[in-house]
Amino acid sequence: MIRFIVLLVFSIFINGKSIAQSEFTWSEDIACLIYSHCTTCHNGNGVAPFALESYDDAVTFKDNILIEVLNGTMPPWPAKFPESHFMGDHSLSQAEIDAIEDWIRNDTPSGDLSLAPEAPTFESNIQITDPDLIIEIPEYTVPNLQDNDLYKCFVFPLDLDQDVFVKAIEVVPGNTKAVHHVLLYHDTSNIPINLDNQDPEIGYTCFGGIGSNSAQLVGGWAPGGEAQFFPEGMGVKIPGNTNLVVQVHYPAYAHGEVDQTDIRLELTTEDQRDLSVAPVLNHFISMIDGPLIIPANTVKTFNQVWTVPAKLTFTGVAPHAHLICTSMESWAITPEGDRIDLVDIPNWDFDWQKFYAFKRPVILEAGTKIYGRATYDNTINNHHNPNNPPQLVTLGEDTDEEMMVFFYTLTAYMPGDENLVFEESLHKEHLDGCGFELTNNETFTEVDEINIFPNPTSKELYIESKSEITKIQLFDVLGHQVLKYEADDILRIHVGNLSKGTYTIQMQVKNTVVTKMIVVE
Image 1 (cartoon, rainbow, N blue to C red):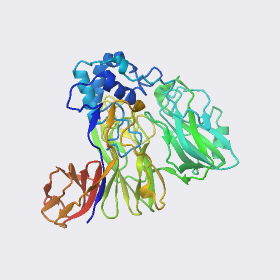
Image 2: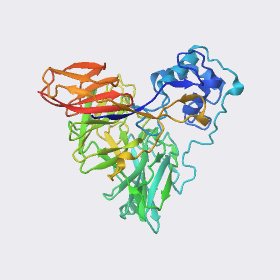
Image 3: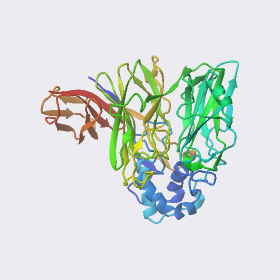
Image 4: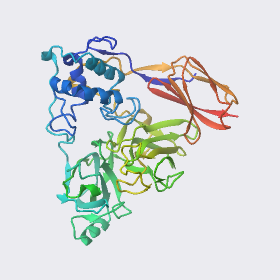
């Protein structure tokens, strides 16, 4: 009998109180949630527009808190997957959202303020405070670009007597009003230095890439980005004698702004498994239905595909697009027809772009196809649209142009990778273990076999399972969703209207997705 292992999350209790009770107070419950999930940005030195460092702060901004929390826009975590998927997921659980809503709608009771946890303090939001190397670009004033964006490269020769591996990287923009995004490359050729010497200004202009075909991407930053920490025993290899090249994108509207961005690196000389950060899905060679052109007053969806050439281990993903993009999604279809979800951002926001690291590696066999899909809304209904009235938008690296890239962090597969766990916790750990307590949050249980019959079928499909299935979806070979069902103990699905062919059926069971292949005759 086939069995599936599922990671279950049991009931959430707050200091012994269930979510059904309306007795939440600041001191016993809500302070912990705000300090753990919000104050890292909402502090006197943070990037947020106001501080949440006390009960009075929370009461003052209670309306803002309620709107953003209920809308799911705060805390900012655009990727919508179970907490078991991505490392560092600081989004609120549904129980936490319900508690905050209950507290605000019941007039924000304070409780005994002497019992409230102490607010955390942040001298800065820098995460890598003791780096092995800091790359600091010279102070740079953005010139008048006359409606053209500028890509500026700064070269830093690295003269080491041995190879090193990057274990963590953090880009600290010197001026977020001026910096669109930052990429760090290493390059063993002399091309970057020659280009720098030929340019009379600081650094050199480098639209697109850095001007060298041997350059290798190390990491980067886009709005909303944070420090990247690579898994234990893995890192991005940098040769001892090479050039580090920082590419900074300055948009046209940044005229006159002064920037001094720096990049902080944690390095090791110990041998590591070499990670690559590669744009395996991109708008040049991966497009199925390109080119990436969005006429004015239209909404268009584009698709990409890439075939995995050898068995690989994937540790993370970073989607990238610009202003009129509204959603991005990537998934894999195995040679057996199984679907593996990789990242889904249903509400794309240019201001919150992240490198998402998997809690457990995703291992894909040779022949697996990785798909990407993105939708672009070039109408007046898109409040992010930079043009009013809307104008033709084409492929390009300027802010008012568009891109469609999925960067994947990957390495060659090694036996045992299936057992790797990069982060155990299902939920962000709270400040000093305060407040909400997830009890038994990492208990494993077995899911009984799920029976699907008849298969092949021509009219109806039956699904029988003793385990509770919460959602069922059917996808065609290109990954398009063709059917969606709410689940029951025994389901009957009508497939007679579908075209003949092979489909992937995806069944959500708690925090795990079980996929199988079916054939419609």
